[in-house]
Length: 310
Image 1 (cartoon, rainbow, N blue to C red):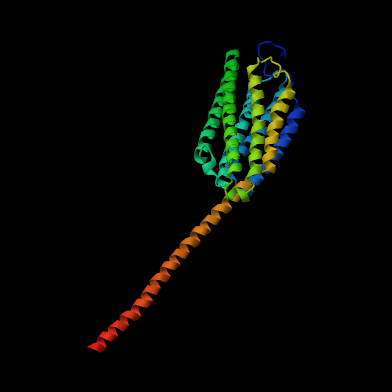
Image 2 (image 1 turned 135 degrees about the horizontal axis):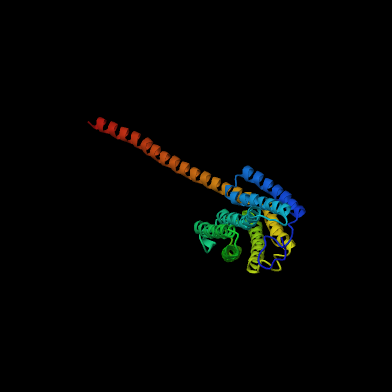
């Protein structure tokens, strides 16, 4: 097969087995770490993030299969690696969106957020779902393997990634606004919780995903014979490394700290509420006892006096 066919090829190079193997090992390691953290700290909302880790290393397996097929590539391994590597960041971003909601809850900062915590999750996860659907549709159309469907599928994928960039940009604006307001009007809870380092982790992860998405849009907007398509190292520098960075970042600054702080606040509130209710009940009982204790002798004394008078 001619790697310089001007119309369309699965790859414009022979995929590197060595590079794919290295990143499979690294993503597998980080996925194992995140699995342990998720089970240990019960950070269930980080499950989509874990799914993203699985998609990453599975995607690079597809590239190894394609490498051994060179130059007679087949559609299934190509579509497999392309779709999984496209979809993985959407699962990362779903957990990132929900992390901001947990930070807002941790610092009791609902009044400082432009969008309420409940709607924050719904709006951005919905955007993520739209992105996933468009990527799946684009990949499905591309799997037909004709020049027309490959071109149409690429266009749909570009639209999907552009939507992801739009939603992430809005998310970053909301995060920056909340950060600014919380800095100027700190809540009592924010003074005793490590919210700032988790906000910074959100900034770093968002920047890495936005960088990767921008390069992906440029890649799919170019022709199949474009500059990016001819250079495999761009995939690893602009996609594999940033996504590896996102996983490493949250393995170090894991949101379990946010979850644990929120649980402690909830437990303290329950204890405080229970103590208040117990105190109120005890006070009420004392009032009733005192009332009965005073009234009974008085009534008995008044009865005795009346009897003497008679």
